[in-house]
Structures are given as structure tokens and as C-alpha cells.
Amino acid sequence: QVQVIESGGGTVQAGESLRLSCEVSGREVTTLAMGWFRQSPGKEREFVSAMNRNGDKTSYGDSVKGRFTISRDNSKNTIYLQMNSLKPEDTAVYYCGADVTRDALFDNWGPGTQVTVSS
Image (cartoon, rainbow, N blue to C red):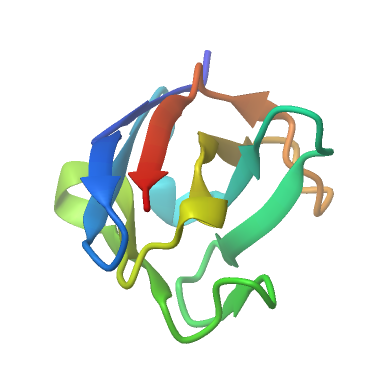
């Protein structure tokens, strides 16, 4: 019932920025903890960022702290990931997840959006 769809990926040069969007349907985003993860070839899924359901707490993976920012637009039922100062190692498929069952685990995922950063 809850669906999330990522968008905004693309190919950019190192040092440039991208803004990813995660549109949520089926439930108000204000009732869901949301997170971003990424997966690159040959590596395990990596935590990027998350926001609690109240929207007053955020967290970031060490590799993106100071460069990425998670935010939420309640009127659009959408969360965003602003990515600045992109590096080639940020290249990955980025996935948005929702904690539908409120067990602190992300159990509903979107199809992902590709981000490619060239050097």
C-alpha cells in the first residue's frame, strides 16, 4: 500500500550537486521514518541518511556528513536528499526506504535512481 519512488538522479562532474526526491504514496510522510541508502557495484548497501517520523531528528553516514542534507516537504508528501560536492565514490544507485511497521527498520523500498559522478 505504501509506495515510494525516487527521482532526480543523473550524471554530473565531480564537485557538482544533485537533489534527489522520494515521493511517498499510501500514507502521510509525517507518520513515517524515512531513509536513504545506496548500492554500488561490488559493495554492500551503505547507509546514507535518515529522518524520524516527527521530522525533528536526522542522521548521516560518515562518508556524506557535511555534504548531504535530508529534508521533507509535508505538503508534497516528499523527502529530499540534497547532495553537494559530489565525488566519484558517490556513484551508486540510491534507494529511498520507509519504516511502515514502525519497528525502526526500513521495510518498503523504491526502485532506486542512478547517480553517476565523473572525475
